Image 1 (cartoon, rainbow, N blue to C red):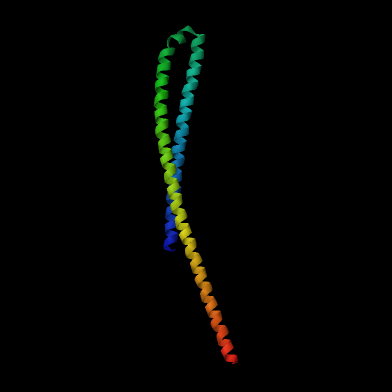
Image 2 (cartoon, helix red, strand yellow):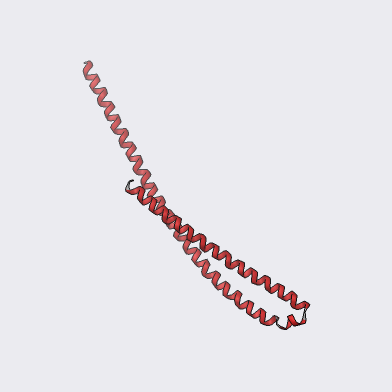
Length: 137
């Protein structure tokens, strides 16, 4: 295996690792969004319950303040996760660019090799034709 192929393989592996990491971070972001949504649903359910029941209404303010604090924390977590996702996306872009750079380098090398083989073959055929022409004269 040539050195360029080893480099391509290595960088593809790194690209795959970064993609997996990005996927995990995106899943974490989705999970945080789901948690925020679940807290909002709980708030709506408790408000409805409190409107139906006097005892539930009495504890509603405590529940709401605790819920809003949880939402605030989840939003901070979401912002942190969003920053991590953006950083991971940039790493994936860079890794992809590296892979493409090595693949292009490999294809240029292959093209040069093919051109060199064609040149040698033409030279061989020209020499055979020249020798054949010399024998006739």
